[in-house]
Image 1 (cartoon, rainbow, N blue to C red):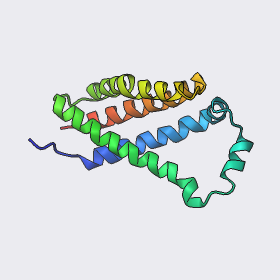
Image 2 (cartoon, rainbow, N blue to C red; image 1 turned 45 degrees about the horizontal axis):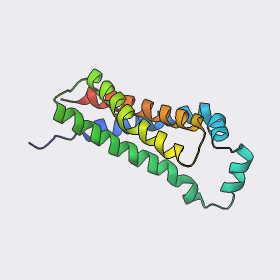
Image 3 (cartoon, one colour; image 1 turned 135 degrees about the horizontal axis):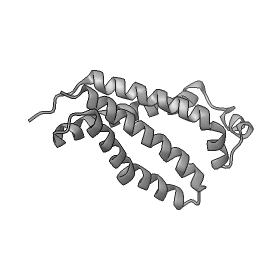
Length: 141
């Protein structure tokens, strides 16, 4: 059976998640930079030679990734037969714990990045997945 796709749910979930990310990193931006061993000044210097397109690209990539996540979440909820906000939130949290947090933890461990970077970045993705799960669960048939 083909899964019905609610593009409105996918888009609303991605927009809500993207806005959450903007607010989250707006509040934790300095701590995030420090966790990378950077300062606002060093980042300005690194970005000075970049084109506008290169500066905007990460924001576009983030939004596209959140569209893909919302589509995947819709598929997970459809195939599990769980079409509720609660199921979406729980699914988002479990996906984060089993796949996202663990991946970020491993990827940051090998190059010796600060644990606070893992905490900040994985916290962002936890919020994103909970929001996406809740929104997609709400709009599910």
